[in-house]
Structures are given as structure tokens and as C-alpha cells.
Length: 209
Image (cartoon, rainbow, N blue to C red; front, side, top):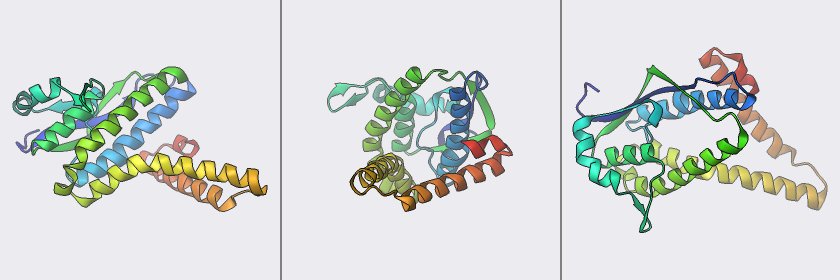
């Protein structure tokens, strides 16, 4: 934060209760990937698109300028008060500030240990991502082209995966054959990513992620 051009920064998140259940262990690994792959790559190209609340720092002078916009969040004419960390990050970028990722700053947060609360959390975050993607689209032409690809990938990736899964089920139901190329492609990409994560994190549990 010594650089006056930086309006916000975030550190690495871990799950303080990661050993409680199988779900908390998976979420802890998910956080590592989100921080050390996604956020780190975004920072390399000049803009972290969401400085996550549990481990984020904002420049006070910049925050004061944005308070009115931050406190009056609307989407399609209706009040919207979820995803405040992502929304504030977008406002920082819109005001011309940079956002950074600092991997040496590590914070632990309690994560959901049951599936129902986790799904509610993910639904809330998905709504926030969808809403703020529309706001971010206006900023992307002024940012590095990688960030445009990243935002598109975040929104289209899950959709394409769902389409692939449904197409595979349709092939099995209609033709009675297994779509091996689809299965092998998804499995190979997953194993490559998990292997790279296990190597970088020096943690073999990623091989089972």
C-alpha cells in the first residue's frame, strides 16, 4: 500500500477449520487455488477483480471518495447489498486505482462445514459475480486483455462444463455409447491442474482435489 496508485490489496486466505470435515478440506484447497492461481494471475496483469473481505486492505483516502457509491448499491433499479467486497473492488478500479495480491499476507477464516450453508454461500457469491461482471465490462477495455479473457472464462466456464455434462448424458441416453473423449478431456485437464497445484503448494492432497 506504499504505492499511491494502489487502492486495495488482498492476501492469501486459508480455512481455520479445514480439518473439521471433508467439505472444509476441499474449501481450503479451493481458496489456495483462487488466491495463488486466479488472484495472482490477475495481479500480474494489473488488477485483482475481487479483493476478498476476510483479508483485504483499502486505502482510506480512496475509500472516502467512494463511500456514497458503495453504500447505495443498486442493480436494475433495486437495492443490492451482497458481494460488498467485489463491488468495492470494482469501484476502486473504476476510480482509476490498481488492486494487488500479496501472498505473504495470510489470514484464516471459518468456512461452512455443511453442504447446505456452503451452497447458500456459493449462490450469494454467484449473484454478486454476475451483477458486478456487468459493471466490470465497462472497465475491461482499459485493462489488460488477459483480464477480459479471465472474466469471460469465469462466467462461461461453469456453463460450458454443464453443457458438456448434459451433452454426455444425452449421448448415453440416445446412442448408448460413452463419450470417452469428453470424459478423458475433462479428467486430463483436471489432473494437470491438480498436479501443478500439488507441486507449487508442496502438498500432495491436491492430487485428490
